[in-house]
Length: 338
Ligand code: TYM
Image (cartoon, rainbow, N blue to C red; front, side, top):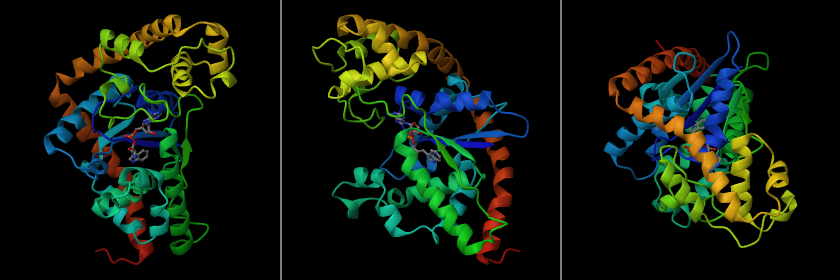
């Protein structure tokens, strides 16, 4: 088993990232057996596909590294690095570019959402982004990729690329790439904005009130939960009753994910209650969950050199695993290497 996953170091780590992905990273790390490995990386190369400020990207990369360690990623057990220090990611992306098809990329919902009507004005990197994502996991022969629901389509594309490459350039008994399986958490695969139950919680939402950041203080968390959009109805006693109430469902989903219960179970406790009772309970639960994380985060940020060292060491371990697959890929394509 080899687990690989990434996160863009733009903006703050928020509750959607945590419940949808990072918490699973930590669980998978804690379950690793002998000879198994977890690689987690900051997708800084992906971050340049949208307009960005270089100084912010630099700061964001170190902050995200600190946030991951604060959440429980242990650099002595998992390989933690940023893509820019492992040039094999960009190299493999180019090599896979001969296999990926324009039509496949054109169908990606994230591309369609982000580009909107202005496709001509987007960067080439935004379009080819999923090919880099495929390279990220194929480079390490990943078997499992823990992600939120929104990244599942990109992982399916990575499988398609791997399969076509193996078919076109490798023999059946010696495939170049392993087909990776996306691992999406049953609860919390998609945490929604606190202001609009139809939009996912996201770092790019201009309103900070739409998300809980893992570094938010207790007062801020309580305020955001109190102001979260809801409706005047009391909570039903079963999930079915929340079908037309996306904001209410989102808050109950967050509560369920934080306590490792399912939505029906939480509604069994809170059914019949209004938000006047539910919101403070949710707020307190969030504060309790986030307090140790944000304390560790603040401490880690103070030691910039230690963070640099963690990323440098992780990158060197990652390169070692990456090189043999990259060489096999060059060879399979008939590219002459000295
Ligand atoms: P990113 O940085 O947008 O998000 C990181 C992880 O958090 C999950 N996530 C969510 N889960 C539930 N609810 C939400 N509201 C929510 N928002 C984000 C994402 O699904 C993701 O798992 N392209 C990727 C980064 C990436 C990657 C990879 C991931 C680059 N290469 C290779 C896996 C494998 C991204 O932008 O994630």
